[in-house]
Image 1 (tube, rainbow, N blue to C red):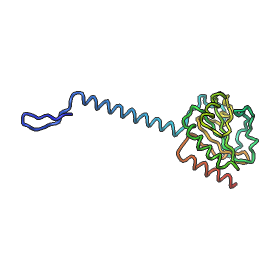
Image 2: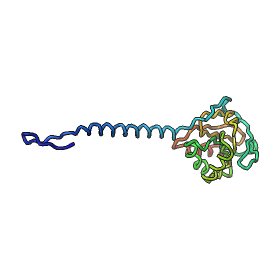
Image 3: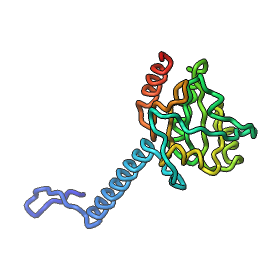
Image 4: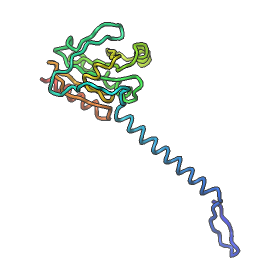
Length: 199
């Protein structure tokens, strides 16, 4: 925009021909940034779709949690049954999943806080041991990580997206299920763990 004096001496604002185009480009860029931000927020606060959707049943709240036995990163077989008598929080995750990356530090805090009465098992879905080991090392993850390379345990639990968290009581009964990530999740999980500790 520039000011121009007319024949009568009155100043008027004039726009150059290039300015409307520049304004339109600015609006398009702003729209792209806004749409991109909305998509990012939706991704971060929901969950990631699994690479292969489940074809099995789904675990049901109030029923026994599906039994499993999987190897950890050292090759030791770990079963859900060996933790009977403790609360178990099962976390299905993958290294490529953004919301999974966001939940892991929160879950590790809860695991440390309730180490006397709760076990946290992080079940990696369908990634190779090498990929998982490198990610765990690079992120300094201390949680016990199990490998569900075939995705069979994920199918038994009906994980359609990740992260997905299953809270199991001392008797092996599934009590709570959380899918995705949201800002109040840590407080919700803490309240649910406390309730199970009082039982």
